[in-house]
Length: 174
Length: 127
Image 1 (tube, each protein chain N blue to C red):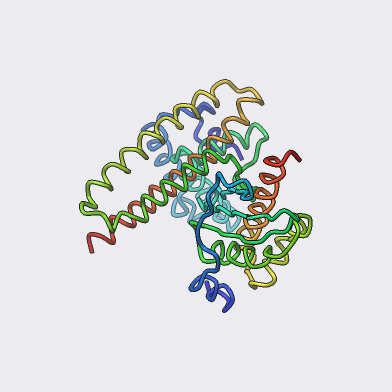
Image 2: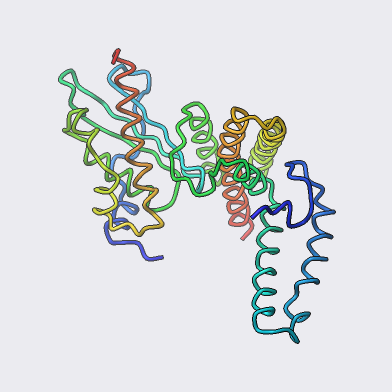
């Protein structure tokens, strides 16, 4: 299913999220099962199914990584369920170092300052990778699509780091 | 999700955690990661003049199954030749640790890590 088509939006990475939100609400109203309570069983079932599709589509398009994965899938490059290992040694070395920094936060004299520094670093890296991803996806060539897939894989590591950092922050507050 | 006793054992008492000096000529390093869960795994082997893996160390940031898989592999490769270590299959790891289907990718990661380390050694020593 083409999620962009469902919302009648152009299939682009650079998406107007406000517009997506309002179209989502409109569609949701239109297909809400309550609107079809007087219809046949088949109509009711279809409305439930359509509501589920609309929700899936909205949540996928809202998040940049899932949106990018969906765009690539529409172009025939499916990476969302891949189990292949990522093997870029330099990138992984950097990830390992960041993980080590996270693990040492609680031994620091000023954990909050360390968290702030790492947080800034993560945000900056993510921003940079997302910009590269937008450029790669815009060019719509097979080669750039492969590049985009690799950028998505890298970004996933950074989103994971972000989660871990938030977890540590939470634990320190408790 | 319940972990098997073997996973818990490796997780609580991981074998061979740590690092070798990567500039040591007898040391080779395999780095792999799983984008889906953000796990990162480093597996190092120390190979003697006869081509036997004398020692192995790992460092893994990930779930219990990923840590257990890499810990187990460091135990398995010790005393093996590079060719023998190359034969280690993720299915053997998954079976030994009784990994559930959703954790099979952790055993794949460990197999890929040892293969990457062997490839690194061969590259360092001219094939």
